[in-house]
Amino acid sequence: TCVACRASDEKRWFVRIVRTPDGHVVVDPQGKANGRGAYLCAKPECFDVARQRRRLDSALKVTLKDDDYDRLRRDFDELLSAPASSQQGR
Image 1 (spheres, helix red, strand yellow):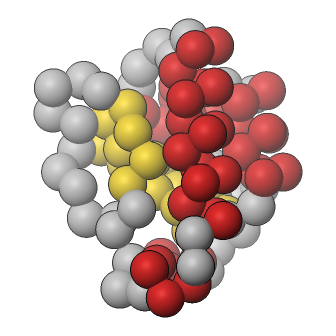
Image 2 (spheres, one colour):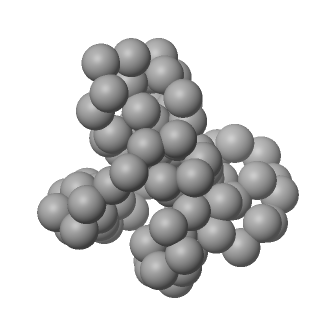
Image 3 (tube, rainbow, N blue to C red):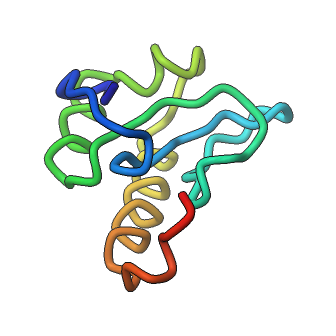
């Protein structure tokens, strides 16, 4: 389920954001990293809603700063712009 729009689908249609055991929050391109995860639709609008409503903070039980959201957005956009063949197996 997307933390922004609440849409449900198969995991492969979402982008996973994970809080790793050491406390870092990163985009998880493979969807398999250890840690607490939150899912977003692979749409920029859903990332924007999650940022505005601080949904990642709640889902990951962490307080993210604007710099964190900027970094995550860059990584999110980079993942979406990657060729589809590199995203298979997610």
